[in-house]
Image (cartoon, rainbow, N blue to C red):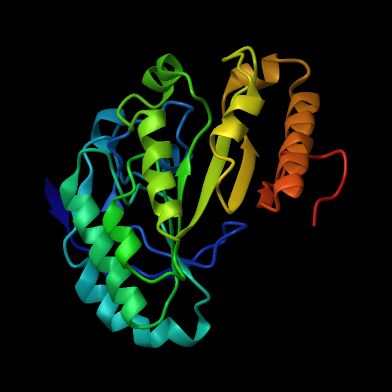
Length: 257
């Protein structure tokens, strides 16, 4: 696996449900084709050349060294650190990425800093041995493996993701799911309630619409569709005492606090 060095690692994010974040890999082997906003951004600024370049991830070799220097500078401001917003911390079949992510979380926990992580890979069970203040999640927008192969071609199978999340849940770790970017029925027609039921054990659900795909706007009732599913998420969560967050721009028929 290729290795790069950076000048900084830990930074404050502008993502609506984020605080501080770390992206200790450049690129992502999962190769999502929604399209992937992170890939489009990196291509626009000339960090990568093309899709093939993006799906050959590069590890930040000096990540731990940078983090040891940066933690004292930011610790008093940090509520939590999220892994990751522009890559995947538990990239499927990439043990180098997984091991570095575990080392990063251990280091942050050693300084009493809470970590959250989100993956389309598998959550390693070693996470259960770390601090109980951490929270770990998976992205799940379907249960249909044909859809995954088309849109998330190199990511972990859906049921394997759910299983890895459930094992952490059973060990007492807080778990969550990001149902984003959710597709419209002209892309895939599926039973949303089955997706929700498959993750009914989690502590939190985040729901967000698919953006940057012209097929969404071709579905003439796309806003009504996302409004309806947003309310379904809210009802589902409130009936089960599950926390939830509806992403900005997904539900626009009323204000969600």
